[in-house]
Length: 174
Image (cartoon, rainbow, N blue to C red; front, side, top):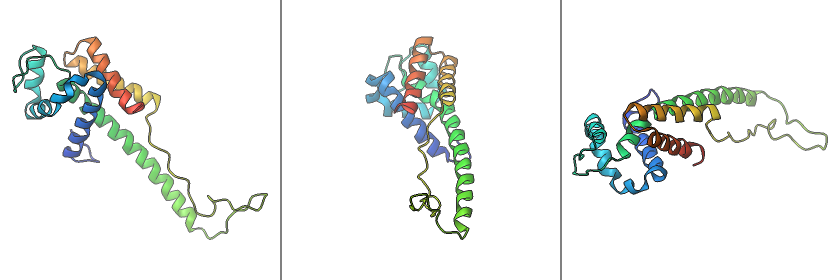
């Protein structure tokens, strides 16, 4: 699941964190078992998902169709998409930062407005970078990716929608 910008362990930790956050909304009753299901999932994800698809008991004896294994599987492509969004934003920020750094090398006095006040941006003070947020199109892509992944794993349409909505909600709303 790794990307060029982060290690496999980092990607796995992010995926687990996002899966747990989405379950807070979609299936909060499963959070108590999340660590055990997560461990079982990472040991053998296909076996756990196959067992869930047949409503069989999972490795530690739980005999209930849970959303947790699907949440863990669904977030993998979502984290990959988010990594590309962040990488693109970082590239743009670097371009802007380089441009601003070069401007700071220019030897010029601060600009003064009509009232005689110095312009902070011209004085070498750059405004803080805006917080990174998904665009509406990116949020739709995340939701569709999560929904399609869940459906591809055999999750029924209602539960796939619930999982996709809770996941994108955690990214957009918080």
